Length: 369
Image 1 (tube, rainbow, N blue to C red):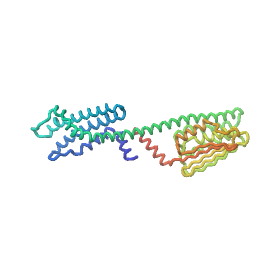
Image 2 (cartoon, rainbow, N blue to C red; image 1 turned 45 degrees about the vertical axis):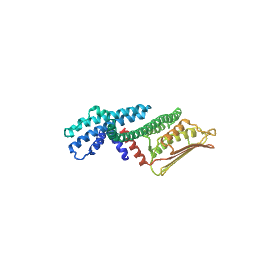
Image 3 (cartoon, rainbow, N blue to C red; image 1 turned 120 degrees about the vertical axis):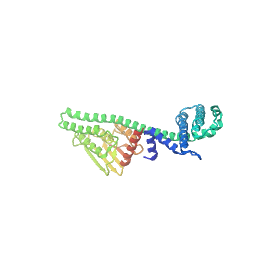
Image 4 (cartoon, rainbow, N blue to C red; image 1 turned 90 degrees about the horizontal axis):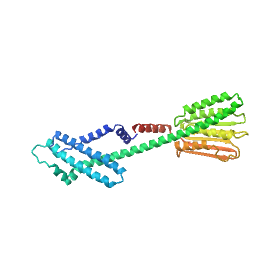
């Protein structure tokens, strides 16, 4: 987190103390005149800080917000002129009738309130320039801070929206997979197959993984490999020796990946490969991870009439998830080569250290909001 972010976060979380600290710094800057005692200097500094505060908060919390929101700039300028006059006149009245009787030795001449209110030149040249020189700096700092916080809130809202969309997609995906698998088990139960109980046990392990281990945005690649192995074992129970499944996988580092995407691709291959090919269906799965470059290819034999994507729900959800999680960092394609349907996914996976640091920064900004 940069120094600017730390300062903005502190001023947001500890708003009152940050303002007190700011004005304390302004107060200790001496307003020294030759021959002035330390006591008188402190009194004048205290009053000057009060005048600065009036001007600063008037500009930062009234004029600037109106300039940003109000279309009638003439009215805002009128407010500023009136407010500046009132603050400058009030400052001069306090100096003449409060500060000077405390800090000066009598007798001395004093201007009347009427003379102060009508001496426009002195109010502008002395008090307006003195009080409002700091006000514009204060207002600019607040404007920069507000714009930064708005930007961070926008990023957080986009992140929350993305997570909500992902949850919706997962809600569509899990029942879709569950529906197909239960249909398979139902078919086995109709013929009193001895592998029905084994299929139910295999499904239970998969559901345990899907429901309780895939709630985060990312999971280790190794857990997805285990999930695929369990799924393949479950699906092979339905078929005799005519089904050939080749699953090869090599990873040099166990990075994190979005869960259930790989399962959806493999499930699609079984549904439209082995499920429709009455001959000798073959499914080849190749998973490789090398130096953050993830490669996943699934090919399955299919009937000749399949010339385009069949499972629009499953593959459509995969595309949406990839666009949300890996924008511009992935390639996803499906092709038909004769009697083979090939799905290819490549992802440039982020470095785990950078991903962790990014999540920590996001959580801190969420806390400060």
